[in-house]
Length: 304
Image 1 (tube, rainbow, N blue to C red):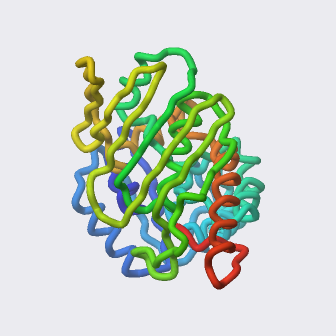
Image 2 (spheres, rainbow, N blue to C red; image 1 turned 90 degrees about the vertical axis):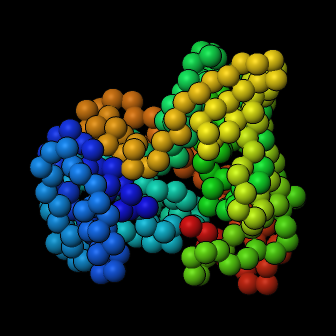
């Protein structure tokens, strides 16, 4: 993911001084290769370093694209080396509430940081949202996707910011009992059903399975039912209404997001403070499920 951010920065219209830090030399080599695959619009300068002490003392914007287990620690370490103005953080933010609060303390209580749950940045959903100018409740069903633990926060944020609602409850009763190893060593995933409620009456139902098949997305907005094909960039209703728009990749969104943040414009991502509210309820629910059904009782949920 970090190297995709890097590719996205190549499209920036202004010259950037970019520092790429990773303790893994292999990851840095991969990032260099991916940087060489894109043609930058302007003369960016890129430095690849494997020691955090090599970072500059001042950084305008830091993008943290690590796994969740080390994110809070890394944010703290960077802040001791460099004075950072803005942050973009990957999800899942952390593995327990303490991680969330550690990040919050370092980033001016979340006012200068954003979390990368970007569905409402996509042209497709911005176009669909423009048809409903007022904040209103929404009912969302998403089926047949994999990676519920690491991806559910994307959809939770989508509903919260579409409707202006707050997350109330994450019901885990429909989840499978056993967690399984994820693609990343040392991390776990869970499949099954999640039912999620919000304080304005909005709802979200997620059905996850390990089979890698295209997700089915349906939205009920003011009684209108939309079927969304994100892969094709199209949403339609049974009475023939159609909305089309791109569902941009991270490499296509990064330069626009960074420009908005640096010029203090709306960037289309939730603030860290908004995302922490969502993460707290979500992590509590999944941690309770883990400690109820798994033999090893934990105080950190091993998801990424």
